[in-house]
Image (cartoon, rainbow, N blue to C red; front, side, top):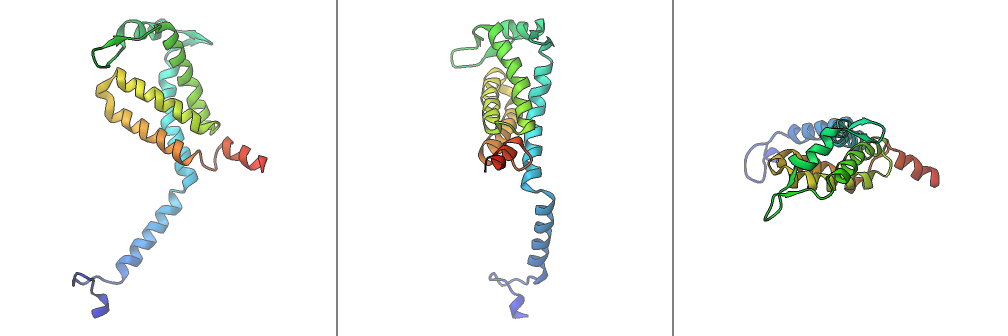
Length: 166
């Protein structure tokens, strides 16, 4: 009975730590790093892709709403502001292009860390544009930082290219 006592003097059945180990092992089996990384990449890609698709009417053809948003609706909330976006047509085109290209790269796992960094920068600009959206923006930033820190995982073109080089 004394061997079942904890340092604090309370009773702890021996099976509890064994149960926790078995549960943790099962969870590690379900949430493998490769699965986690591809889900993380897709989760970050989706909102940007959806936003990007809504900015285009055709190949390299921005719709009027996208340009209008950057011309009159969206403002940068910086100290002393809000300020208009500089060169709204160019910013709308760059934003729409990045919102299509970067999510594709993320999902494919190609230039993954660079794509995640691009979406992190976009998230920072979006935060400056829509300050009240920080609960969602911090989630995007956390996903981008996670991808930048741990890479794309084994289910990616980056990994495939890396193994082919070796």
